[in-house]
Image (cartoon, rainbow, N blue to C red; front, side, top):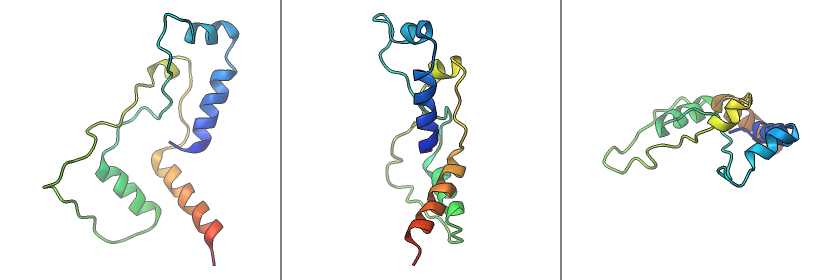
Length: 108
């Protein structure tokens, strides 16, 4: 998840009317509100997105004899979505922006 979306989600939650915020934080409710994009992604998909962001034209090779890592990385963002908030930056766009920022900061 891109950093500006995390900040936006926090600002959104803090800007809720008191009645909505109090309902979210009431003693009889779950104490956590997941912040995420609401989409699952595989390791292969992440690798392909990184490959595209850095304009690498090589081939990705996966060792299928090894464990696949965490089967699911999806957070349930239903509570936040039901309030009307949604991330604006896709994973691919966030990776691209992060890589461009890295290049800008570390250009020789």
